[in-house]
Length: 394
Image (cartoon, rainbow, N blue to C red; front, side):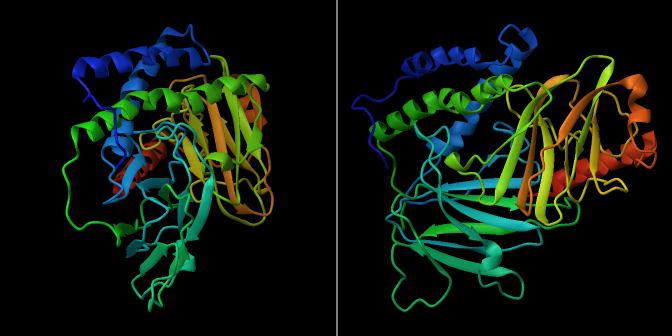
């Protein structure tokens, strides 16, 4: 555990340390928006709670996976189809990861060299493990050891651990929230102490000092990122990989700011790759929080989406339900961020967004566009909420 300052942290000192966090409001895309400012202050509180799990609760001697992004912590536009877990490690250690695969679409372990918001500089991934590349038992049971050298006499699954390793992250992808079963995972440090030691006052002070700076380090990356999207035309998207801070290999992201008026909607259109392991598109608010996906249809994936007869994916972003199956609900917002993912695909199309008058929407859609009645929509949203709650989050 890292050493902290010589003098333990006093409560008043901690309050002084977090007092300047309101400077993060300067990162807002619309700093004069009073409603958005309230949401930004709310996010600062959320960010402190997020940082507690990542900084104060972690113990390099006894690592464990914790939920960093989930339906409560929605910052950095988390993918609604992924469950994200992280454990902090040391590259010199020896670790065993074990568990059961479950029936999800895929589970991916990433070895990271620096963690967003926790470290001053987030680092890229330096190792990857697809769970389906491991030896799986009849019930999906697995175990893999990570270390600098293969343990003597060990013949099971093993991966070399880079000395720069700082974290092991889990992305657990689900297409069908209602029916797919999440896996279970545990991590153990095999060369660590077997008993727990009480942290020293100096160690606690150091952790609290790092926690106080977490919201600003995090906001610099993501809230400010939305502001930079203003440099591209509204209602357009550009591709990127996020590989510099741990984005999945073989995954292409696209992002852009969406905006429409009271009497308008956005028609979202894209080709779908011929070969793609997974794809998805979501809506985020101007703070880069994914809009409450469990309570409204702010996202769609390749299983949930309905393609038109010409093979294209068309969706409507609108405040009120337009009656089409692929409605993407911004939960009352007329401005925010669109983000999508193509994973392991043979192409990465860039979607097109078109502002359309509500009165003209029907004639801009193909005649065979899948529709939903109000009752069918209600049943669909209840099933979505049920499926989101079925997923293992902690």
